[in-house]
Image (tube, rainbow, N blue to C red; front, side):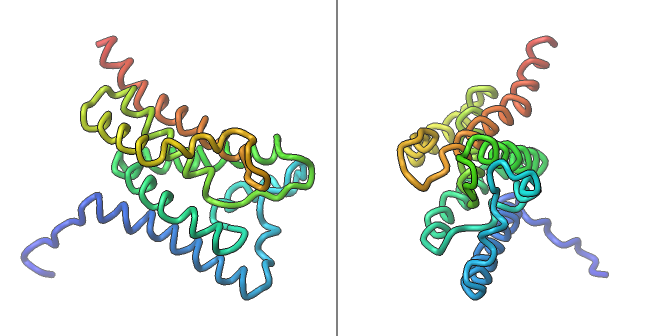
Length: 197
């Protein structure tokens, strides 16, 4: 054993490793999907099919072709890393909660027989989490992050409306609601505790 302890990785490095690892998995799965002639597409969330409910857990990792994945890659990485910087436990809660709520919205509110997949529900969850977090914490740094995130990605919030054929506004809406709810649960409680004290 070395006499000098190894320098611990920074949270930023951890964020890129974890979120980047998830993104890398998406690319690997899309490669497999391409080789197998889109065999993985059937593992998306199929609305109103009870057996498909379990697919909610992994549908964010699947995409309908390379353009779909490429379009999601940068916002997923940027917003996912920024969310991770709130802390690994908060990131994990937001990721899992958003995945479930977004998937359930797609399953419940999409037309019968629709298959939904892709990371955009998570992207909307990360986006609204970051926007709402600054409101709840009232910390200058997090408010500034909220402003920058809104300026960079705020226009995509229109994706919660049924304005584009072939795009799951249901998953987007579920993800957006879950992101706000996550921020309220994780940061609004802290605000209430500090007020009561």
